[in-house]
Length: 611
Ligand code: M6R
View 1 (cartoon, protein in one colour):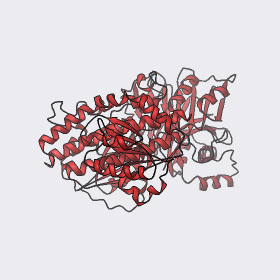
View 2 (cartoon, rainbow, N blue to C red):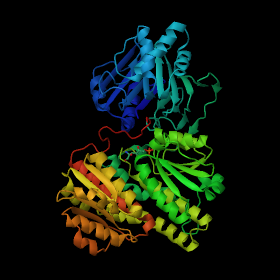
View 3 (spheres, helix red, strand yellow):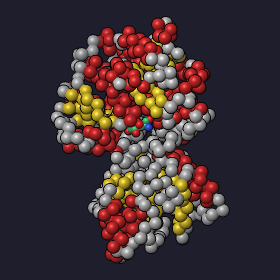
View 4 (cartoon, rainbow, N blue to C red):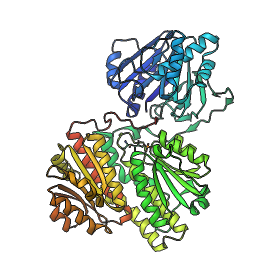
């Protein structure tokens, strides 16, 4: 939810922190701040973006080889200078940056107020800084012990970096629920919420686990559990490269990521499907294959776009593997009293692998003894580590807050899984299995063809850029795509948009149709084609505007619709992968034409690590 970066070593910390914050800005961007320590501590912070922070520090003392930075997505307290991190404790002993939520902060705040503490911000983080300081001063103990004692009183989630004035040259990091990666250099350490601020300095990283505390100086990294057991750091090499986090000449990350999809889908299936169509191999689920094959039910848990991918998965698993599927929002599932059986197969889908609600749902499922698979994009993420097995999507880092390439890669994994299970369970005949594999292999080339239509799609975007509302409708496998199209439009252009199963229109939403209402109709799938024609006619009869996504060469819908966007002919099973592309492009251009910040839409953050 927020981005943390920190450094200890011989270099000047400031440029490392600023560059790191720019990379992490996708995680939150309503205020930013840094603390630099060079004998004395300097804290600079302000409402706004990292560039506002850079303006603020012009002419200021930015020396120091130890420091921490933060970019915020507000939870407690509005975006403002005083609520920006780092927060300092009242007596100035501690500086803290925090990602997460301290749930019992009201209680702790009251207790500290009774002990004479006052607060400058509305944040839970300042409460924690004061709690650590209070324990440290009252008990006259080391900073590390004070941190551990304070954290044992905290209910909630945190990724934290803490600095104590009395122990210069040292940073303390702790994690519960919110990610922290430590980059290990030569007599220097880098800390961050993800590896992007680290990779140009070192490829050696370790992921902090829940309830672990790292005590770091330029000379050494000491790892402990919250209860003071010594632990051995598990340092690994990461493969992420600097090219992955550049815009490569595109105006926005979102546009770059839309255009990357032929390559990212290929990366998702490469080495997993035999190019002759004979088989699929998913190494990540090999160990649990008997459980998968014998699963009585699949429960998919996810949020947002990943939940839409899960809905596509539902159609695919039921059709090809003949296993009943339920698709659940992580946030609802975790607080219901769901009935989970040991022979259930639970699939958690998450681009970031850090989404708090999805993670909590997984933990609930694991308590019940069911097998959990992860479909994650970020290697080493919490969900990928807490699941029994899983398949990485390999879409590469997704920086645009609006998910695009992660969605198509998730569907690619789900399709491969459904086909593999169908083949093993003998519910998918070999000939059809082989046809589907070939269809999947042909998808990247077909997406290239759609991307060539961008100028045409942009013209259509210019017609609808000023609307206030939009509806999306589809059937079968294209119904989740309608939901995803609506989400893409609303989250980056702030146009109110809703997706519906096309047949549901007549049960209410059709009342909204008039000459000002555009309806994006997904009419490219063969089994429901005739029915979609009827639904389009119903919209036209009420003077709605129709933009239809159709299969190339379609004549019937062209006669009715105001605009058509063609996609290449394809098997229905892969149609979501193609049909979503024009909707992503449309949303992108509409948002750009409306002057919106496409990569960092208002009120959002890329990774939702709070519930
Ligand atoms: O990282 P996750 O896939 O778990 O994230 C889930 C949602 O927060 C995410 O898909 C969100 O809906 C995107 N902004 C959609 O574009």
